[in-house]
Image 1 (tube, rainbow, N blue to C red):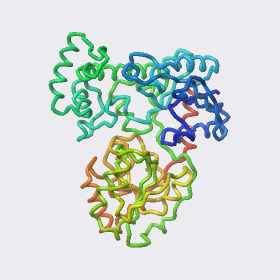
Image 2: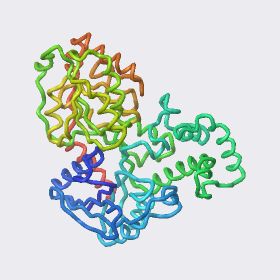
Image 3: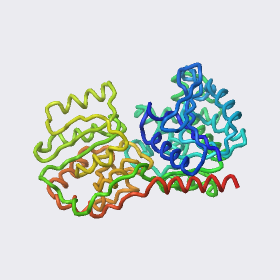
Image 4: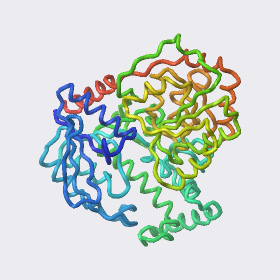
Length: 440
């Protein structure tokens, strides 16, 4: 069996959840004597190249496309698509497994159609919610959880709100709806005005693209139950959907239940992830500003860019000796490092699919304090194995932190309730069985 795993980036250049998941799947499949290769774009290059990462072959096909409005809006295909198509034609894989699609010069719906036309079986794993939500966060007007069903007018209002058109969204929707009824697509004007008043067309295209994706895949794999429900709600064929829940990609040493009592009076918190607004580190920093330094400590492990957001966060914490900025952790260091802390903070400002970091925290035996969004709430039971705070609500997060400071026994009880996660070997078994079923 020959399988191509297709995504936008791979290790070691980028080390996020999708890349780690794909790596773990590839290694597990190799142990089952499956021939596996990773395929990614070689962005900005007019040549293809290859490299090997821990015995996994990675092919980077040339992708020299200049990103502009026409490419982002889908008016032209990425230039590297031709080389991608030629490559899969020459390789003749049995399975082409996609892990993400992009909106411009990355892996796109065009690549899925090319894979289907090659005669291979096509699998799509959903790591993010953007396939059915234009904003990608499944939060209506960034205030309330959305049920996830694509509705032209409602989604258009929400999308315009996310773009900052708070006061103009109603007249823009009215104009867009009128043009839609007149079969005039202003997005074809290829300018900012056309995009703004073409919102209903953009949402309509989102739904069309999703249904085209579902039609041309032989299997659709959500990694969380909540997103399986959304796939069904938007018309994906139930017989194509296979729920394969998240597993822990690496082995871990389970912490003894006897070690769960706090060793001192300081609440030790850990944050692991990108220093980015989507990860909500600014909410956590803000919540700690008025809390007593001698009662709480935060260590931040994450990838930092030299941007204004990161600089502002670091500057804000400059006088706080109880907030420490650490370097990134290697994958094999994460669980062991977490075991030195009392709780993980996951302050996502969007609906993550099924955050791997929650699995890692549970493997370390520590509860998670997280925002109450789909991917977090599916794994965390409030006051049982963690705490949930209101989405984007710094005050609510502060309340949960104070709850831990004032009631240390709560942490001890939550730690006793934590169940260790399943292994990634179980995940790989499910994929292997799925591949065999498709090929038979």
